[in-house]
Amino acid sequence: MKMHKEEYEKLMLRFALELSEVGVTEDQTKLIQASLARTPNLVACEQPEVVSRFTYRHNGYLVEATRTVKLVVKTCK
View 1 (cartoon, one colour):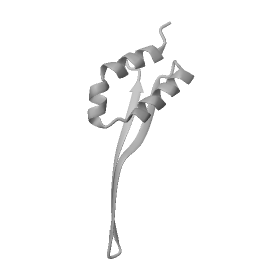
View 2: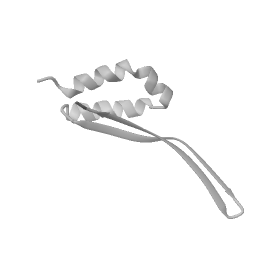
View 3: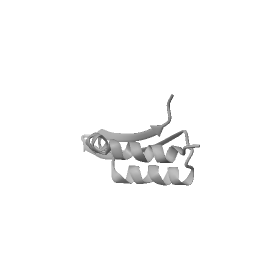
View 4: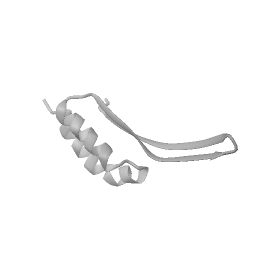
C-alpha cells in the first residue's frame, strides 16, 4: 500500500513556486509535513494562517482587513 505522505511530499515539491506566489509560508508547509509524519495515511490535512493584517482606528471607527492563506492537501479520485 502506498502511503499518502509520500504523494503529498512529491506534490509539495512540484508546486513549490506556485505555493510561494499564493503566500503559503514555510511554517505552514512544515506544520503540514509534521501532521503527515504523525499520521501518514490522512485523507485531508489543512493549515490556515493569517499572513497580513491591517487595523486602523479613527473617531470611534475601526477598519480591519485580514489576509488568510489556507493550505489544504487531500486525496481525490
